[in-house]
Image (cartoon, rainbow, N blue to C red; front, top):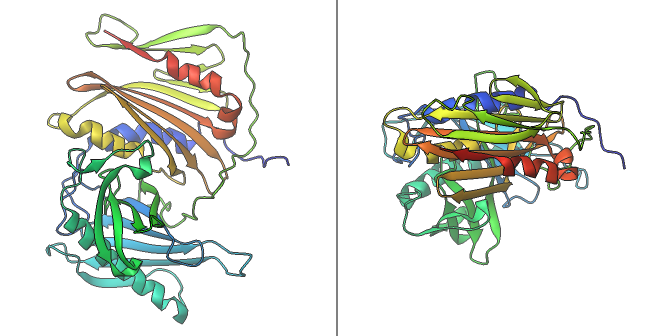
Length: 386
């Protein structure tokens, strides 16, 4: 079966915004905390949101929470159309206000943003309950950070964190909650029953880039099988290899980043290369603002995991590897408006006390799968020298 042709090149606005804004977002500290009475290891940023696959419903369902500011939140329930059971698409959106002066969650107002029926009342109440309950359980969990002594590590991103057992009536009794500092708002990744059955799982998180960004309200779930659209791609196997360095002039007193691309890549800007409409590569240097070097790498990792405008980070595809002063993250992004799926590779390397090198490679997933050695060799060519 022929794959669907999808619009847009790899260097479109979605990917470009991700590269340009990521460093700035990671460096800009926020003094706010999304949840009353809870002090997160990484302070929250207005516009952050998180979505969970909610297995307590009999149909495919997602529950989302968005932090506007310390007194305003958006809550959303979404279920895609179920043709087999003749169930229509359902989306319920609420805007709630809270008292930020309290040390617990206390709602002071509500506005329903979507059309609802009398049958939706139970879902509205469920959203209220979850906002209260998840806040209370995050507060009860205490310190959630990379330094938490009971933190468990796993090869799977969604299985890494701090596991705590709590009694949770909405999920049938005693459950295991897995917390991790990289998750916005509740720092919650999963909820599992005593039998290990998954009940609640984070599927994506993001941060709105402006008041016009509707990514939170337009989320429609993550397909069980992500299939990228068809994209044309050819390259010359005998294309000349071209070494690049940053900075280009060695007299600058800082480590130099190196990468080898072939002549098919076009050098568009000082730190940006394009491979036609198929892939984008960038290599940059980031200076850490004063007073933030201790938290910078952890903050940056959390930012690397976030979705961007209409492009959703697929969390069960995330792979994180740390080796000394180098952090490598790979993941896929799903664009529900176009059907495009991209594969992202990011490397953060410590160059000095207040300087990091940052590499990104983004390529359409179907192109990567068919040419993985070609793109993997680009990543392998990346090095740093004094």
